[in-house]
Image (cartoon, rainbow, N blue to C red; front, side, top):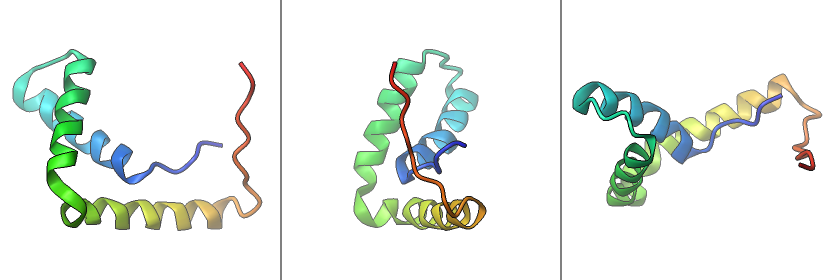
Length: 75
């Protein structure tokens, strides 16, 4: 079972698709840097829509998997 995405991962998922489509950049390191800079520039108020979405996703995950507890596997 996968964990629900946090607010930054939801933002990155959305923005990376837009960046690739708009700029044709395919280097994921560069995309990650650009998305991270844009995320920091948003500030807490600008990040709130993704925080709300992450909360909703966490609640839905809790309903689907009520006994779920993250247990990382040793590598």
